[in-house]
Image (cartoon, rainbow, N blue to C red; front, side, top):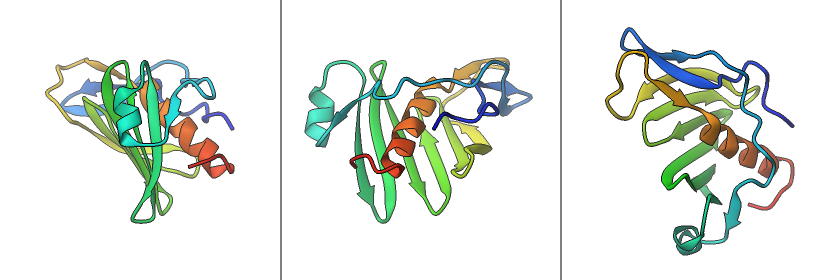
Length: 133
């Protein structure tokens, strides 16, 4: 299942707040992230990779994309994405952005690409459709 067309391509810092920016919704390629069975395998994996697990009832996806750490936790119909520069909060049914906050200092007008977040959401949707966790 693809992400909805309303999924933002990026977030932009405007007036001290992160707001959805322009652009088409990211279309992650299925299986673009190599799935790892352990944290050790994830650390050692070449290129972009992820690890899916269950923690306290949540589906948690840890990933390294472009050499940076990313994380998505999905539980109770809500999801939290944590990237190097942003935390984004989603309603998991329909993947609607509810809020976002910077995880680092951002300049006015600075854009944050949500493609890594979209790739993790695609992995979560694949797991929900019966794929391995």
